[in-house]
Length: 495
Image (cartoon, rainbow, N blue to C red; front, side):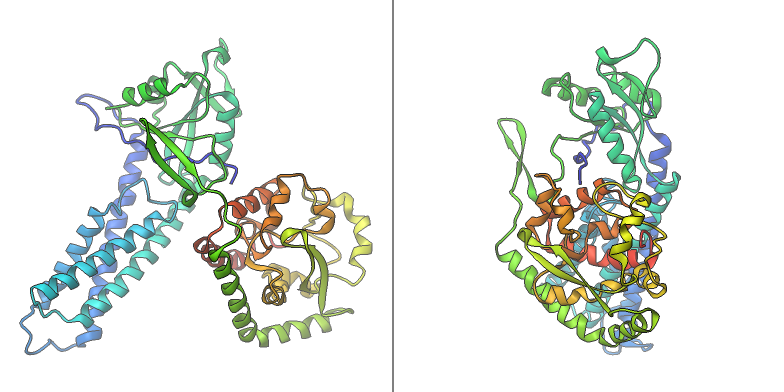
């Protein structure tokens, strides 16, 4: 994404005696959310242990066993919660955004399960393996599912403006401050609420001023005082010629004891975490960036997964495909399938398949509708396009018109996940940067699909496609496929 990536917050020391902590309301909301997670986790683990006991022993108390399960069960819940706490599953730096929260929860559960298994073998404790296995399986899945539901509720609250969010003071040159503010506001669910900005002295006017709608509250010489004055709990530093390494280090010292976190938004953009490695060299935290991967073993695995999944999906969805084909045939005159030339990997053209959703002379009518285009860039989008048939509107709303593209995936022309397949006329007007979309196969779905579809501007669609090209992974593909179901069910941006 064309966003400046915020680094992990640098923790400051606990507030000194008599110091007034910043962002009291934000931290109170944060503690409330953590308490809610603890209550939910306790309930999930209690139900998991109960399910393990009921499945293994039923209603009867196990006979001939020296193990007091009435004590073991609650002890397991308590130890499990302690394990989650010890492995920092309640750390506010991983809550509400990214996959690290899920990895920590799963890792804590698996480590505890392994530790108990080893301890039981060493000390010859006869706790039922069936009881433990079922409890840990149900509990781990339940924890991840509960965290997912809690995160979605938090995201909705943040977008409404009444959820736990960091109060951020953005610091840097004007252009970089505006870029970072735009980036953070583009994804309000991430929980970074900009409340002010500090810019270089030379840019300050004699009267209070604003950058866009962000108030300028000070210069780069009074950052701690400005943060305290507006109740910020986070200082986000972006690029500035005045903020040298020495001044940035001194700023970290100045924030000690204030309860204010320091984060740094490097100029490096559109690079995801797996490609970034930080190595300390001569006291400098050098960021090593690996090159994007466009070939190799992982690409072969992706190819195999794509074609196998497409074959299985076609077999399972064959009755639905036949029903849709019949509906298209009865709804309007013309062929059932629509074949359109698109550009794939390496600039190679292919015929993408869709169920026909428009009248047969749709291309001829396009010239009359160009003036009513509702998007910028090279695409034509119109919310109430008169060329779309009745059944076509329904198919587009639920993305059912794209099911024939499973054949394109099976033939190796497309992938399940990738950039949007462009038209040759669009590609002819690509500049050097946008042409990087053609380094990978186009996809049936992608980041553009789960981020708004037709509601996205041309620039945002390109930004998401390029981000995927640079940072694709099998795990990311699975996440996008999962989110696609939600995007289709909501029907947002589909027309």
